Structure formats: structure tokens, C-alpha cells
Image (cartoon, rainbow, N blue to C red; front, side):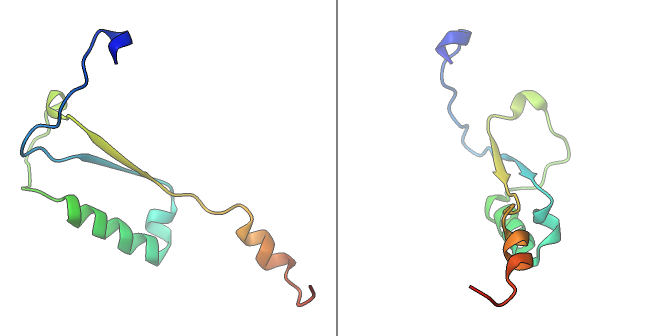
Length: 81
């Protein structure tokens, strides 16, 4: 941050994070959907009616992706080793 002329900002008391969930599995997979709901409940604070962009002091990004080999393993498993 020093390269941009800024300082390291501190989280404000009473603030809550903006949460971003990246990946289709958050809604498609039942286990991931439960984890999604848990994370939202865990970080939930008082409801807000408006969001002021300058008031956002931190964002938490949760990313999930399918294992590209998971389908290959299931398709290639013909009972032989």
C-alpha cells in the first residue's frame, strides 16, 4: 500500500464485511450451500438498508471450484486397477 501513497487501513469497530462468493458450486452442491449459509450467518450483523461504498472497509472472498479430475476419475474407473 505504501506504493500507492496510502497506509494500511484498520477495520472499524462495528463494521461487517462485504462477502463475495465465487463459483457455481456455492449454489449447486448441497454441502457447499450449507457452508455458504453458515458463513453468511457467522458474519451477519445488523441489517442495513443502504450501502455506502466509502463505508466498505473490508471484503472477504470465498472461492470454490470443481476438481477438474473428479469427473475423469469417475469415468475412468471401470473396476480395474
